[in-house]
Amino acid sequence: MAHRLSLVRRLGELRRLYTGETDSSLWPAVTAGIASLPDQSRKTIRDVLDTGFETRLLGENSFPPVDDQIRCTVLPDATDPVQQQLEAAILFALGRIAPYRWPETSVVAPMPVCTMIRPDIKDMRPVLHLRPAAAAPMLATLLPYVADGRVHGMPGLRVSLHRRHVRLCLADSGESVSVALAGTSFRQWSAMLAFAGVLTGHEWPPALADPLSAPELAAIAESLIPGPLWLASALFRRLRVLGTTVWLSVREDGPTGIRVEWAGGRTAAQVATALIHPLVGLPGELFTATRDAADSVTATIWGTSDEPAATVVLRRSPLSAPVPFERIETADAWTAFNRVMALRNPVSPRTAA
Image 1 (tube, one colour):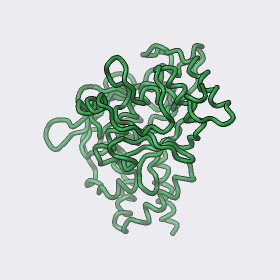
Image 2 (cartoon, one colour):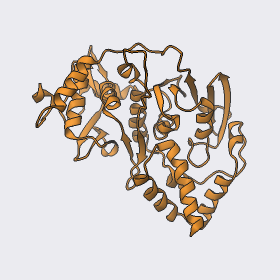
Image 3 (cartoon, rainbow, N blue to C red):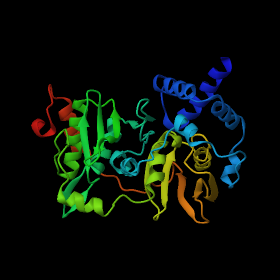
Image 4 (cartoon, one colour):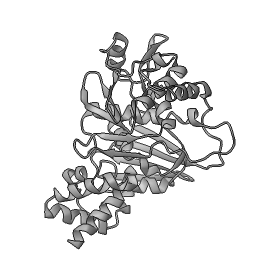
């Protein structure tokens, strides 16, 4: 029994590195997951935890591939391409919020993009924990609207409201494909819509459930979300591996690549090593890593052929370096946010106005 508890503890602390989970969600999930596995699978986990894996950075595995059932039990990945598409869109949106959060002063404090990203213990869909300072600008870049003849944000994104959370989903998939925003009250949601409305000039109803519009259908047909979706989804589910960042940028790097840049947090080498872990790292069995410059690593995931399946460029910028973006003024948007938060019984941003 003591050995099993030790395995739960080791695996839980490892998973926490990627998800940022608190004890209340972490230990029940890890305990239930390990209990569902046969003895041989638990032995495999112990063997992996007891063996160095860093040679995977150079394309060498020191043990056989870990079974997908084990990886799914420890930290599941999305396998549905539509779910991957939604998670990729949210990742890229989070990678664009730094200009909205950057202060006017020269004093900068850590601004983690999210506090936690965890799989729901029942259905394994992601549950994202964001503070309003990150959630509001994310919605401003993610919610769909038509301007200048084209769709901005993610076409087809829809919203369902629940008592203690908001669920982002897709119009043609329902809640079977979704990401939950945890700890989001109706008041907070209405305030965040007001924030996004000031920045975009568009107003949304609190529960966004309209049928797909013609511009959205056209945009969906063009597949506007860039980069390898499966890789973006996997990075999204491991976002806390970066540590407590000061700012974050995520963008596509060609058709098979993603570039992640940040300041603060863990080093690029630490992140690259964590992302190739056989139990909780990115999907794949063959990796190579190249140090490009100081605190910059390119990790390549190889497929079954001699061609790379995907690459992720990891670069941590010095805190003293100029930021690679221009600050966006958000004072009026936060005024609208605070006005809705102060209402006695908010109904919607439109009513609040």
